[in-house]
Structures are given as C-alpha cells and as structure tokens.
Length: 321
Image 1 (tube, rainbow, N blue to C red):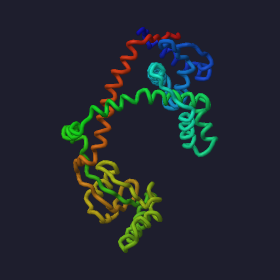
Image 2: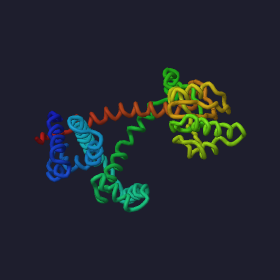
Image 3: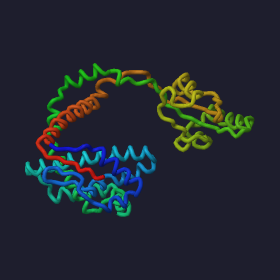
Image 4: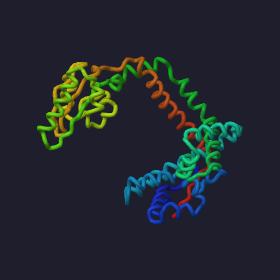
C-alpha cells in the first residue's frame, strides 16, 4: 500500500475554503486519491463536506474553523477510501442490490419528511439530487451486506457469562444517584416584594385548600414548565437552584413546600416521587451491556478486516496544493 502524508491536502483545502468559499471550491474538480482501480474526486469529498462546512461556519471562525475543517476532511477522505475498498470487496464476492431494494429504501427516507418541499430542502442541504441519493443508497446497501459478517462474528464471541462478568466488574457504571420527581410553581420577582409575596401566598393557599397542584401551576406559575403543570421531572442533586435543591430532598413524597424565596422570586414545590440511591439490577442493564460488548468486539473484528483489505491494496493520496 502506498500513501503520502495527508496534512498538506487538508490544510490547503481548508485554507481554500476559508479564502474562497465552498461554492468556488466545488467548481474545480480533480482526482485526490486512487484506491486500486478506483478514484476519489474532489467533488465526492465535497458532497460529504458541504453540510459539515455550513454547520462549522456557524460555530467556528479563523484558526479554529480551519482546524475543524481539516479534521473533517481527513476523516471523510478516510471513510471514502474504506467505502471504495468495501465496494470492491462486494464486487469480488458478487454482492448485488436490486432496484426494488433501492426504491424501498428511497421510499423510507422520503416518508420521513412531511412533504416534497421538505425533502427537496434536505437534498439541497446535503448537496445532492435524487439520482445521487439513490447511488448512495445502492452503495450503502452493498456495504451493509458486505460487512454483515462482522456483526455475526462479534455476536458469536459474546457469551452470557461475558455479560454477567462485565456487570460484576463494572457495577459502579450502573450506580444511580438519589432523585426526586418535582412539581414546581414560580411567582417571578417584580421588584415589589410585598405584592409578590401576597400573590405567592394566595397560590399556596389554593393548593393547601385542596386545589390540584398541576392545575394551579398551569394557571399561575411563571416558570418555564407551567404549561405542563410545573412538572420538572426527576432531578438529581445540583440540577436546580440551591433553594429548590435543598427543599426537594428534604420533603417527603406528596408533601408541598412552604414558600421558597430565591433571587428569581417565590417558589412552591411538591414531591411526586423519590428514587433512592441504588445500583441498577442486572435485568435492567443486560441489553445495554450486550450492546457495549458487541460494539467492542465488532470494532476489533472490523479493524482487523479493514487492515487486511488495505494491506493488499494500492492506495495513493495526492497532494493538491
């Protein structure tokens, strides 16, 4: 296998993107890599990079943008090379994909969108048309079929004893902190504490008189969760402001707090449920452990298989300065 240093291509590409923009960059197509008898062109790389560049330009600038673009370009060129190798292996094995399989997958993708306009906007954001999408679908289906043996081999290498042993050796990973399910009402501070206190007291009196907490929250709370009855869900220590945190873990299930004052205003909370600190039992996490072990085994098998394909292949990456 023949390779050259990659840094030059990625820094040069990123500088070009920053100085001239993506559209000008796409206009100049050329071969940037060769994988046995196949080539990879700049336009293929750009097809993968276009949505990433748009996203990165919103989050980064200057040297940081350049660095992240270089990493993305290096990653996606590596992926394109590996995809070429897998598709070549699919050809050697006589693996094919029918038109029906392609159309079925295309229909599944299109059904994820509410209308044709949304689908069109999605295609434009990915820098492709329908024909390109269908070619990608065909390639992806071939890749899936060709690599199916990796998951099968990984599954064969995992026994029930392995899953139990992992649980016993990693119980700390499945520990859960105590949590409380909190309903919350907030009367925001207006700067007139006497008026705020009077309003909060009126709301608390309604609850104490038997009014439904959620109904009162929907009508009077000025907190962000008022529309759903002030339901904050389960909270761990430190997930809310200190005043709420302290009260929530000191109250009992079903108990309503007195008025709690904070810089935000006056709060009222009710405890709906409590969960004690615990280690999740094996039956709750065995599927998660199975997935972890399968992922690790599959990665090792994948690396060995891919390295084998690369070793017996001719791969050349061209410097495009």
